[in-house]
Image 1 (tube, rainbow, N blue to C red):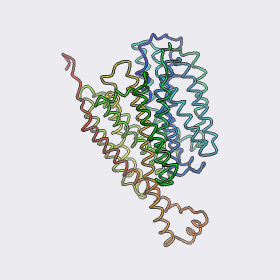
Image 2: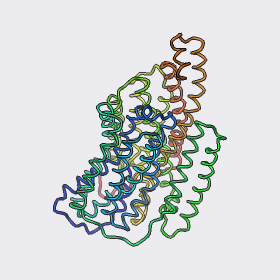
Image 3: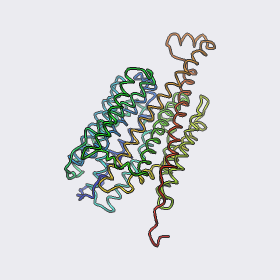
Image 4: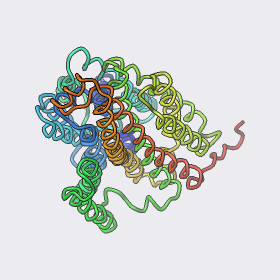
Length: 508
């Protein structure tokens, strides 16, 4: 959904039709596919990345968060910069930066190196994604041509998540986890070479970028996320934990103060005065917090407990992607007749049911009983919510601020996902630590001679004991996820008040 901001920001521009509009559309759509795909393609490779670079399970969440934090935090800034400096020029810079970061991630030899590359990928994505969709307005005339281009672009964006988990499984199984990063490099280079040949440049618009606001929001949120993850490993009184929370306590209020006073804010705060719009932002925050966590922990469960290969894990996620697509289509076709609220209430209830089911995960859970059922519920719920949340975000917004409204929703989703995952990882760390102590005691009293010898030599629990620790931590994390899901239901029921739109006179 990151592309929606750019869609709304795209003015009814004087599009200059190029000689090869099909190639232009392919280049633009390929960019969005690469950016969206990169959110999910890495998920399936996480267990292999963990082994290769010695990540802890809690530290592993940064492979996801480092990308989504910089992507979401700088998304609005990327779109604004394209308007000021020229969208094609900024688009090419974003693609090249994303490709370079992907190459650096693929050759990473340490956890720190990989996380730095993932952060740089997020910066490139935040530059390329909003300018990519905005370039459709520059290259396709308003009407049938532009609508068709938007349709192709939307289909690619919607299918990117499913393609990502499957592609990640294939690349990790057949080649190496490093290829989930390397695959972006030739695609990015091709896009950067083709863009100046087939994509028209946009007119520049006067203004300035709110760099102070963008970096205060991004660094403040990153500090908050770091504080939670650090606390899960080193405790709440650790010096770095307290420093991170202290930095967040300074930077985030400063961001709000700055946005109220700057003449061209990156996030117009008056958008939050509308009850339904604010409800949609809060709902997106809660739902993204659960969604990122479901993908993260289920990936670990199906590979480390059920023993799925990366390719099988990719196929295991296809049902949830299909459920999201089907539910989103049903919701889109019935918005005028039923209005957004029924879908928001039913969708959030389905998400709650799915997370509640997942909170009962155990080491004896099977794929069909412990994964497929709850993730299908979750997928249908998420799909029911995407369209009405977007409609609420832009309803009643002045045309010149539509981009800011949808961009804020998209940024909220990315940042909410990172923040929620960090909180659930903290809960996972606490739950798994207490369970590890119990499993060590059990091993010392009931373990075989070989198991005891291996444990004393390596300090690692044998596989059956380690699986119990992992599953107990995952179940604890999903129990905390119930809090976000319950909040989503309460927001949908009591905060959002929209009703079906009035039908035109004479309509049936």
